[in-house]
Picture 1: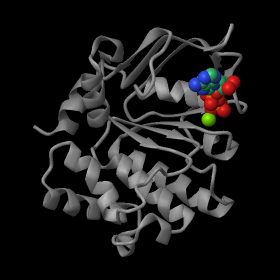
Picture 2: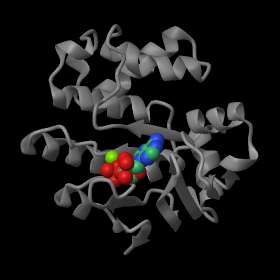
Picture 3: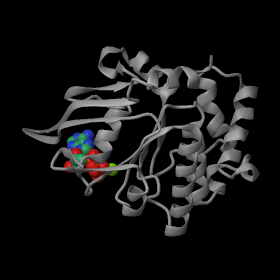
Picture 4: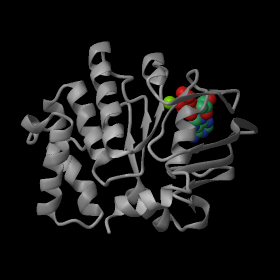
Length: 236
Ligand code: ADP
Ligand code: MG
């Protein structure tokens, strides 16, 4: 039985991500900045959720909690029913590697590696052989329309192409959920539209849940649900 089948069986009764009363404050000298004041929501299998909000409202902070990259001051995040707070750092990293994909505004690709290698590396970390990982990376590059750019390094690609590679990398471990922080924030309108179409197609085909943090209203409105982050709380 492959991971996807296991996931679909679980998902009948289970949310992909559960965010339970997340509070986050930062200490700055004598002051405490309360960025998130109690965030609650659930993300369902295959659901596409947009989170919008003004700059500085805490969108990236929230996304980092959802991805287990940072720890909340209170509350918990459950990924496929498993709480981040209960595991060790290693267990959290493993859970993240198996079930989540990340896409950032600035692609965060490794400059010295080719497009194909950038996608293969997470698969090798997950335990695939190099040969198998490179083969599968080619498949994912084809899915995002970049089969002709496999050996190009990030600096030899356009902004839109780099973001496609980042998306292919996020999909490479067959995640239950992909978290995206302003995935089109750095692109011109036409390229952003192409990326938006690609995301919608991929999520439909693979039943992957998406959370897109964005201040692009157009991409937000193309999602199934839009929540607004304001004054530390999420509103529908
Ligand atoms: P957004 O992504 O919506 O623009 P962020 O999540 O990046 O907002 O930031 C939300 C608020 O939290 C901002 O006021 C920011 O200054 C503050 N903040 C973010 N990270 C830190 C940190 N490490 N230390 C102190 N304050 C932080
Ligand atoms: Mg941000």
